[in-house]
Image (cartoon, rainbow, N blue to C red; front, side, top):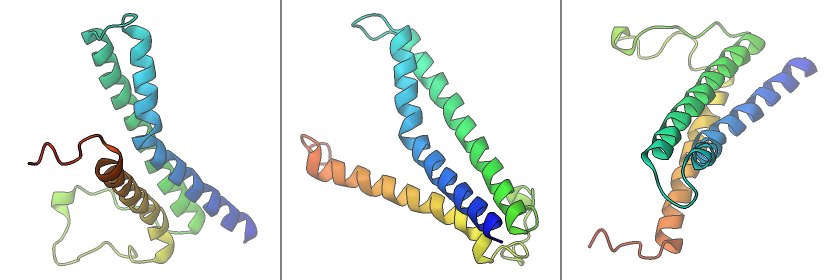
Length: 139
C-alpha cells in the first residue's frame, strides 16, 4: 500500500516537472541549441530553423513522456487503461467514458491544468507589471 502511494506521488511529481519543462526548459534548451548553430553575433535562418525543430522535438518528447506517465499512473492505481478513441467518434450521449470521474484518475490531469493556469498567470503578471510598455500595442 505504501509502495503504491509512494509511486503515485513520484509519478505526480514527475508530471509536474515535465509539464513545467514544456513551457520553460524546452524553449531554453532549444534556444541554447540554436545559439550553437548561429553565427557569433548575428541571427541566421539556420539558427532559427534549428530552434524551431529542437523545440518541436523536445516538446513532442515531453508530451509522449506525459502520456507514458499517465498510463503508468493508471496501471499502479489499478484503473483501466484510458480508451483510445478519436474525439469525433465519442458518443455525445455518454458524456464521459466509464470510470473517468474517479478522483485518482484525475490527479495527473489536475496537475497539468494547474500548471497551465500558473503559466498563464505568470505571463499576465509579467506583461502587466514588468514589461516596458504593457499596453502600448493595445491602444
